[in-house]
Image (cartoon, rainbow, N blue to C red):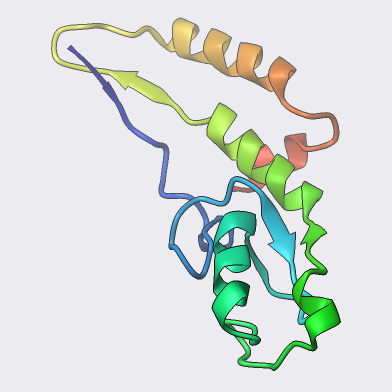
Length: 119
């Protein structure tokens, strides 16, 4: 049978500080802290503060969520480059793994290949 294993756990800055989950739509508050949009919107409905800094946000800044496209692209790139390992009687040749990496590399956003080698 096949078993998918991530090359490693995602870097901690890919995780939403509120949920602890991989961010799907990272946004940055005026305080400079980044969160997943759904979680920070729910947080701000009941609290006027930044979860990390505790800084009180004026009403006009509670709705100012800046999309963090670079981080979103880095997370997507990390997901694309995870390695699938085939075990328990299935032999995956190094050639097949290298071919899969090349195919995935072609699918990644331009300019992000440096992040694939750095993580």
